[in-house]
Image 1 (cartoon, rainbow, N blue to C red):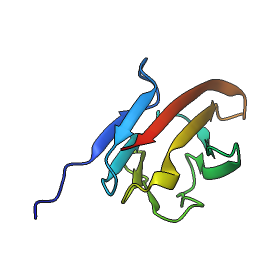
Image 2: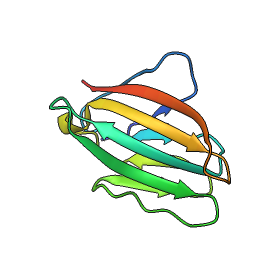
Image 3: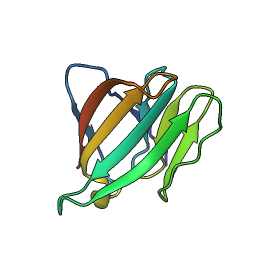
Length: 110
């Protein structure tokens, strides 16, 4: 059995759709900012914070199955599950905590 290459998605691309096969690895590339917060909204409209990041601190996701590579600023979903389908909202901030931008990504698990 060959290991599949991960699917790579980016919040700053114009197409905010991302599709991943069930069980596949997903790499979410984060923008280079001072601070960010990533929120997940599932199909029952429940919001959960997956990641809060500050440039000066190493970061661990608040959610099982996710890892964060601090060197490449990549959030990694080790094995996509159907429950990971939903809307991911990324808020970015400067060093003073001022909002820099908001990005949305719709993740579909096939």
